[in-house]
Length: 394
Image 1 (cartoon, rainbow, N blue to C red):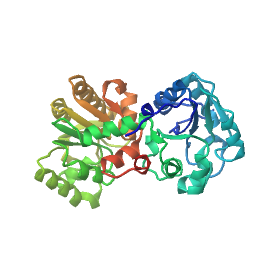
Image 2: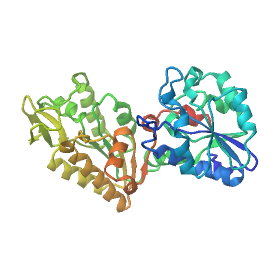
Image 3: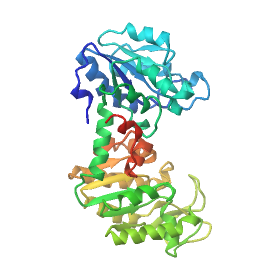
Image 4: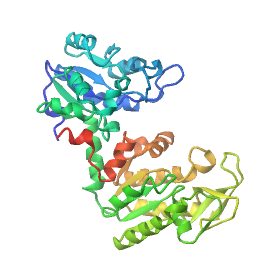
């Protein structure tokens, strides 16, 4: 894997695909700068060498050139984070952009306008990629969040830099950390898979069964497993058509000597709302009119014991509706268990939108080994898929 650390960028212009798809408020202020900060080490390495940077990214899913999706809104935040006065050009290809690039000197940073203002970007159009390729001497991909897309700027463009392309430091570290779980994990390995639906996690579970010792299943998806085994789950979330699949997963896990841990008790509510009435129930005996919205105290203890005995932990998906305070205890306790195991020397990888949100919300970011910046990309890697943005760099 060739990274920016293997190249001297002196007097070179690096064309960097970053992932600055960040949330903005109504006044177009950046509300979460995690992704911008994540790209900083790559950019600063190039500037330190005496090179210049042309940054390209998308923002949201524009249908046309809507102003709210302009990357101009992030220039101030980006400048503050880098400590450099970032220049901006209101297009991403063409003579105006080429002229702006030609004026760059060592230590300069130029941000291009939203790539997705051009439909050619998401179509993976080679002519569009070729026009982008004119803007730099060396292509650097540091956008893990879009590495699973075969877009013009993430995969196709690499063809125009046969000998001058490399991984950014963020992308390299994402690949390395997912690899620690999939290829170089220290046993026992535990995967915590939560969230609402079995259907969205099935491929991951099937792909990791060969690599793990324990599988903890939580969140709404657990009820499909409970009901499949004959449990009464009241009005809890269930995928009726996935019960056979749930039983198959349990059977496969048994064949591979993977111990599956399902919740034993649940915090149940008489309504899906923050002010619902709640009580504790055994997970397989929930009365009609009630639904499980978090794991119960006994389950928290059971999961904690498994996690503290683990040496490698993957966490993808919450175990309750943590957005509501009444149903956040299980996810907070799970995060604490993972943080404690990490403190004791385990390697912990957290990825997938909701788990990452939970880790940030409950101040656990610095207490786990690695928090992935790319939900979809990480999930596809865990599913064993080849990511176009990564394979294009080899």
